[in-house]
Image 1 (cartoon, rainbow, N blue to C red):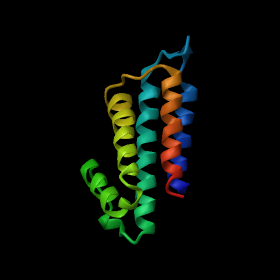
Image 2: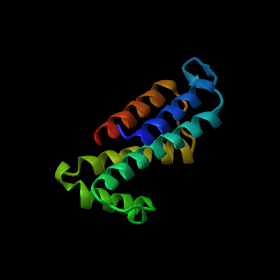
Image 3: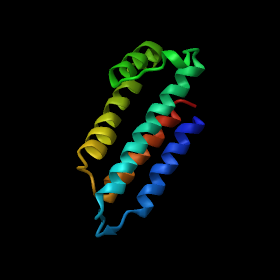
Image 4: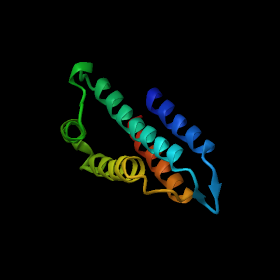
Length: 125
């Protein structure tokens, strides 16, 4: 796993440990939202590391979600769109529902999201 991506994911998990739980529901959404935002950054860090390994320069790294989509299509097309589909799913789950809108507060959903993030990052080994 890319080192920096792993570090971000560990930070996300640490944020969740600080969040109070009551009956499988996080009662303080702020650390949960922060954890989702940090997990999304882990996804981006994994993609960045993989692109750098393919010879993309730091200046050429994507700077928007659209640019990340294009980079996945261009550099990882051999995966038959799997990485792009997973990226899209994680973007909606982590960034939109979890971080931006703060809609996810059930611990089982949060754990599944982090597990899916780990699986996505592991694809870049």
